[in-house]
Structures are given as C-alpha cells and as structure tokens.
Length: 390
Image (cartoon, rainbow, N blue to C red; front, top):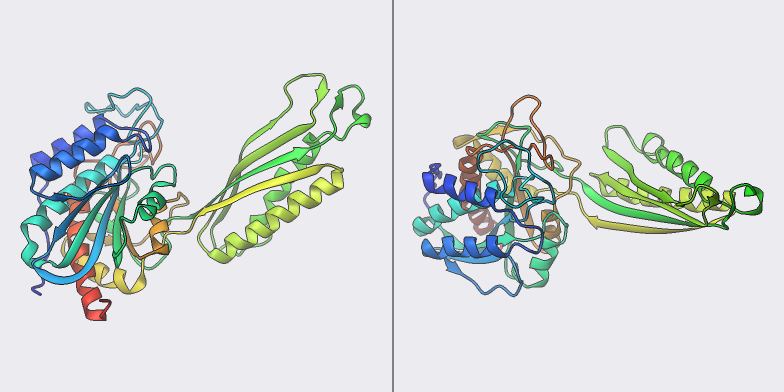
C-alpha cells in the first residue's frame, strides 16, 4: 500500500461545523439534536451511516478499496452542565450547558478525517468504523457502545482529546499513561444520635469522620513512591442539620485517581482499613461504596509506535503530560487495542482548562485532530496487516 500523509485543510465548512456544535451543546445521553446533525452531515457527504441501537450517538463506516482489518475512530459528543463564560461570539445558546471539555472540537476533527478518508478509499486496506459516542462525561458512554455491539470485530480503536496545555499544531502521544484511573467513593457512618448537651449519651459520627478524612491523606504520603502520581480527594461531607442535635448518621464522598494498577489496588485496601478501623475505635459503624469504574488510559505499545513515527510529518510531537482527569475511552481497552493522542487546543499561558466556564479551544485544533485521525487510521491498518492480526 502506498505510504501517504494526510494534510487536511481547515475549510470554512469544518469551522462552521465546529462552531455550530459549540453553540448547541447537549447533556450526556440527551445528545438528540447533535446526533441528528452529525448524521445529516455524514449523509450529505455520502458516508454510510449504520443502524444504531442506542438512543443517541452515530455510527458510520468507510469500506476501503482493499481488504484488511477493521479499525474504529471515536469522538465523544456530549456537553457539560456549565453556564458558558468564554466570551466567544459562538458561545452556547443552551443556558446551563457548555462544551467545556472541547467535544465540539473532537466531532469536527473526526468529520474532517472522515471526509478525507472517504475521498481516498484507494489508500485504505480494510474498514474504518466511525463512532460518535455519547455520555463520555458520565463515564458510561464507551460501555454503552460496547454493550450495543458497535465495536464487535474492531481490532483497534483510535481516539483523541484536545488539551489546552499544548498549542495548536501539537500532538502528544506515546506508550506512557495519559489519563488517570478513576474511583468514585462514598462512606456512610452509623452512630447513636443524642442531645447536643449530652454527647456522652451517644456515639456521634462527626469526630470519627474528621479523623478518617485526615488519615486518608496518609494513603498517598506514606504508601506510594512520589514518582507514581496518586490522588485521594474528599470532595463532599454531610452530617446533621440541627444545631442542638448530635446526628446519628454522617458521611462523605470523593475520588481517587491513579496511573498504576498496583497503586489503585493499594489505595482500595488502605482506604477500607482506615475507615473500618477508625469506625471501630470510635464505636460506630461504617459502610463503604467503592466504585473503581475507569482504568488508566494507555495506548497499545505496538500500535502507537508507528503512529508516533509518522506524526512529525504533519504535526509537532510533544512529550505526554499525564492528566489526572479520566477518559472512558479506556473502557475500549477491555475489548480491543487503544490508540490515543492529546491534540493541542490553546497553549496560551494561564488559559482555562477543561470544565471551566471560560474554556476556549481554537479552531486550528480541528486541522491537527483531523490529520491525526486520518493518518493514524492508515498507520494502524498497516500495522495490523503487517503483524498478521487478521
């Protein structure tokens, strides 16, 4: 197969698509208008749209001129429950909803790649499946796509996330972890409530909760090498609602983020031990809800290597700055081989990051994202054929 590098122009059409999507964000699993718009654009460009058993999202397919394996290209499509304060003249028209994580950039980038790949089917040795995935922000969309059978037969899947910490024209990719594994935890403490003037007649939970929260910070400082990033964050506490009553119940919740599985397992063990032993010391009961719902995101080493070798021909390749945010793209690694890159979207000193009401990603991001999707699709198809994956 002829070796070709895609250089996709940032056309007026792609800019208009990106800005339309930014202006009309929708919440996770409610991306009805977004899905209809994407499907209409795909059909207008002669792309085969496949049946989708899910209520939102779009799946399409490009069949190459030559036989070969199947790879998927994925972009997420949901917005966030944030009121936009970016100052953009194409800011959200939906009050309280914003593309504050740049998924509009992802969709437009993938469409740019799809248009190019469709026009160059003679370069494709295999099949390219296109997945516009709902509900990434809930961490549930990738699993829904998998459960719907939409990645059945897919031998590798390629994804991106814009990153405002890099300038446009930059890609960061490699074999290192890129985004963190995520745990959602909740703790409920069960005690004996009493009158605030007679605390000795009860076993109030608040002192125990305070001790637990402080002790949980030792999971990081006393159990893991400082060269392995690990975060334990308590983000909400509750207990009691009357000034003169010691409550019978209290609780807190938060998250753990990690890049190495052994650190995640250690954190779970230490977390449960601290909560249970502290509760016993204070003479109260405790229950723990521990949801280790997302693995760290790491690209398949054998597939990302040829992709990275090719990147300097169309973008600047930068080292990975790992993010403690999560990405449900990691879910696909349970059923196929993942390839992932950060795409520079701003790079201005002090610019707002993801999930900020002031987040701004530049239009130029779309060109680099489109180039990555298209070139990585060809690179991965070639690598799969060479390795005899079929």
